[in-house]
Image (cartoon, rainbow, N blue to C red; front, side):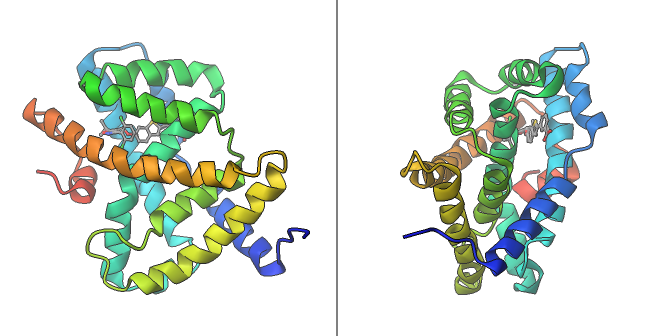
Amino acid sequence: EKVEITKEQEALMKLIVEAYNKHQIPQDVTKQLLQDQYSTEENFLLLTEIATSQVQVLVEFTKNIPGFLSLDHEDQIALLKGSAVEAMFLRSAQVFSRKMPKGHTEVLEERIRKSGISEEFITPLFNFYKSVGELHMVLEEQALLTAITILTPDRPYVKDQQAVERLQEPMVNLLKKLCVLQHPQEPQYFARLLGRLTELRTLNHYHAEMLTSWRVNDHKFTPLLCEIWDVQ
Ligand SMILES: CC(C)c1onc(-c2c(Cl)cccc2Cl)c1COc1ccc2cc(-c3cccc(C(=O)O)c3)sc2c1
């Protein structure tokens, strides 16, 4: 039967996409990727600055998700802390899937490869970027997938999981309809998108190890990253 987006789904879509477009890392931060110092230290500092800016952007985007601010305040924090790494993998993955202006893609890859991350994490990290790139997600899908990731009910320390499910479910239903409408020739596209969310969960584990190895080599993070990642 014909797939229809309802008026209220249309309104939800508009809110999520507007929030996603409104909250972006400032150009002057990402433009620094093009500067010419490429030492491991310089790359780490640059990625730390971008990640810090990304967390600020993520918090603002999350506050615009309908219903999020009505959740229990401690649950709001638990959702942000639990999803930050996954949301940043999604965000940085978009850079690799769309051809960034002025070759951001190449310099970002170079800087990530030479930022003190051990080889064992580089492989799964770039496999994920490749698998997201192959999906050629449209902006609506990227925005919804980020909101769905943030609204994952079973994050550690979330008390009222049902309240989070009630916010996540309409987003998942909307994304499912969008996928059918955007990719009619690919019925399994929605399943492939959700498969990326599963892959994101495994990347959380790798990221925890990345943080430990950086800290062992006495790398400093910003106060915001220390707070969201419970380090130092
Ligand atoms: C603290 C730091 C060393 C770190 O620790 N782990 C990670 C990480 C790494 Cl490596 C990979 C995945 C996830 C994490 Cl969390 C990072 C760096 O995280 C980030 C986070 C967001 C973004 C957005 C970018 C980006 C570029 C150009 C354009 C745009 C754009 O949105 O236009 C975005 S790069 C970037 C790097």
